[in-house]
Length: 134
Length: 134
DNA sequence: ATACGAGTTAAAGTGCGCTTTAAGTCAAGC
DNA sequence: GCTTGACTTAAAGCGCACTTTAACTCGTAT
Image (cartoon, rainbow over all chains, first blue to last red; front, top):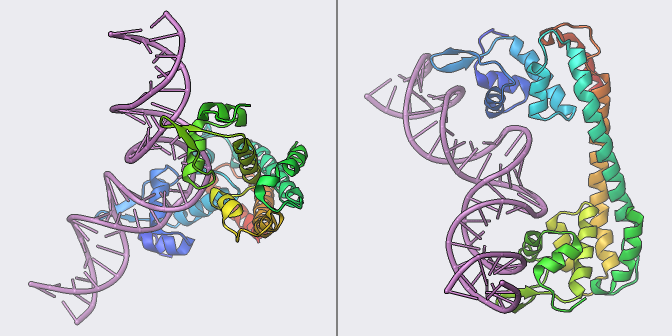
């Protein structure tokens, strides 16, 4: 792996579009790389940085949260401590989402078991469903 | 409940913004109401229609799916049959989402237990996490 | 008369994570 | 000398469900 790869090569290696890499740079997730006649040249450490970004994204962090993880803490903060701090809040969010999904499932399975022929007739059945919502 | 309510009253009763009601009308979820000197006047059946729409939205259906439920089936199709058809696909989507969330939880809990002092040193730990991803 | 509150419209804005587009630069191969 | 392919930028577009804005029209109370 050469230590001065152009953006297309880095992108292919990471399974990303070049535009995504430029976007990450503008968003402050990637340091500004060296240039050769105007074009970005990336070193080997970029691949690792991209893998970390992907991991954070896969874990559900937004771009802003990922930037916080990478550069939003006092420099002495260990990666483990950074991750713990952010993961705690994210897990709470996921818990909320899980509950939302559970409620949706309940509604999908319990609604409109009425024998109404037209939607306009379903009013009464819906009152029952709304009870299940709480 | 008067049978010719203006939009603000309907909105307040339903817990929605007037703009949302106009949006539903434009999106084909609500029939075009009568007008009095240019202003919309809603009958009592609108409240029931809005409750049905809210139920569909709470169950995770998009506006387009909700429109399908309300008016995208052969007229003779019962509400129960309509709901069943749409709910089946939606439940499959929710299953996917649940799996996505479970994977995020795993990543949040299992990543960055390394003792690295700087993010640049975490490469090795990340390889382990990526194993957990599969 | 006039100010107020509620209604009307079309069009643009929001948030998120990119992608797409348009117009241009550059090095290499023929 | 000319094409090709990969790169550059800023700005706009996408999907979704609305909200917000701007400019206007009503009927009613003062």
